[in-house]
Image (tube, rainbow, N blue to C red; front, top):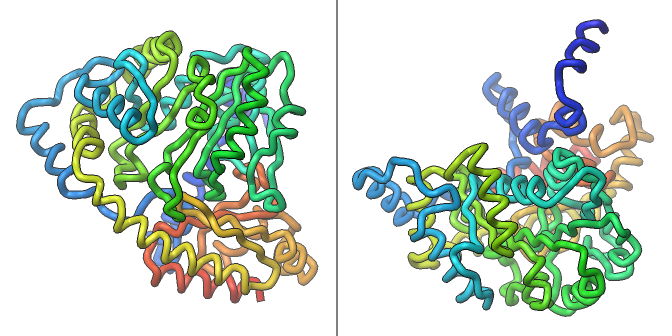
Length: 405
């Protein structure tokens, strides 16, 4: 006990207030079991199972051969910033200048820098749940208060205007949007975004962030919109966050980017100059090739995700105690397992009526790694990634079905 007290005295309150990323922790545990010889099927990690397209890898090799291995400007090389500006103009209809864009070490760093740049102690950040695991913890690192709004399966996992309006206080500083959503795959329609934008227009003190990392993992073929598309008048207080990780299967290359008001982007740059400095020079040149080259490489991935998505949702909806919605984007399924959890607990199969107990049961007894919904602020659900082979999915879902039966 004394050692624990001593450690807590040494560690900052800031780091003690947050937790390790649950998805990374579960993936690591599953990986450990796999190296020990267990036939683990991991459905926890959120990354495409496809290789980075060849023309992007070729650009990285060419950058090395050309000697582009030195420091770059903190906010990104001019060619990549221009490619980002052009992407926003061509695909989204947004007009940005180079000083309104920053390149970070993955999308997570741009969100981290944004929160540290704009949030003060006691500021409130509205986060619809289910939410990506890091939003709340990053807000807490910035000494802000996450205000979680429950948006369950009954409302399609989407924030309603009346919920947003009710959550706003004089302390509200930032609202986080994520569409397509991690973990649910929910996608807001243009009309839904306009209704939320109308609420925000009445609150000029609130900043708006839209995390569009899964923009191109489009499972319906319908046109993509974000809150700024729906409400252009928010531009002077909206930060658009994106990256190359998901669309181009470049998770390990660590390139994210953000666009927004120049003074906020500059503040993010100052923070980054004192942490990582620039994103990897070689990865930046690869990202230029991703954004400016042929976009045909995206479609085969999306086609595979659509097939897997349909299979997974159909299977889950036939399993006892599960209910799963079709997603609009991303590569996740997020079934409601509350009835299944209650049944398993009643039968004495799991030690508690929680999604954490269910996830441990699936991993320890059936060698399948999933992420409990409570990691995303939604107790009673679990998330799987279908960014893996159909063979893996069939085996994994057979095991889950056996566990639930």
